[in-house]
Length: 154
Image (spheres, rainbow, N blue to C red):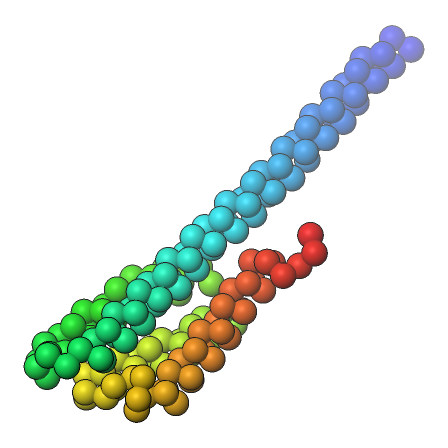
């Protein structure tokens, strides 16, 4: 009977240690999810901001009548170059459904860039490509919001 108090104490210590480890593990997982979500938000925001800036620059270039073909091409390539780094960040972090839509969106952005290099004025002759670009933008934004759980009722 002298072993019973010792065994009870030992069993209590094991239970306390186990529950502490379980609570700590759950807390770490929760923190990891929060960190991952915040990182995704930042990467998605950088990606969309780079494309928004590029779109603005391309529209400005498309209506500038004083540019030579060489200047227009250089500026268009330079404007789109800002989209490369965020795209590679996205490739590392985003799920496949976001990546597939982002790839289509990037293709539409490059098509706009190429139109401008050719000398096409987006407001007058590139409306169809711009509409396709905006539809691709909407699709990728929707996929990002879904991935982030932005539309859930949590």
